[in-house]
Length: 131
Image 1: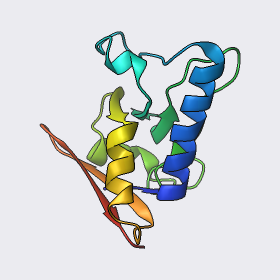
Image 2 (image 1 turned 135 degrees about the vertical axis):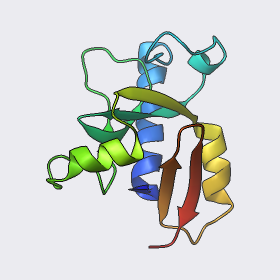
Image 3 (image 1 turned 90 degrees about the vertical axis):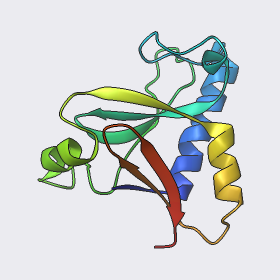
């Protein structure tokens, strides 16, 4: 499982919206999203050098906001590659997560402090925990 503080999740969403407002919309990480998904705020769950959340607003020379999973941050965990392989898989990739759906989930559990993501071969599960 991968864990992110709710505070950091909200920061990534806010940064993506701010970047989109200034720079004309949202980015498509791999050309595979529908036109509807390209027009809405969200975040990307990215697996490459670690696993992290990334803001999706269009950029003008700036870097997106990136927040690593607590278990899979290469700057803090020497076993990050094994964690990435077990949780995200061996290949690099990107999954889009809708911001509105996340906000509904987080709003329904005000006592939660962390977002937890688990993945298997066919599904991604997102839930909230109090850590």
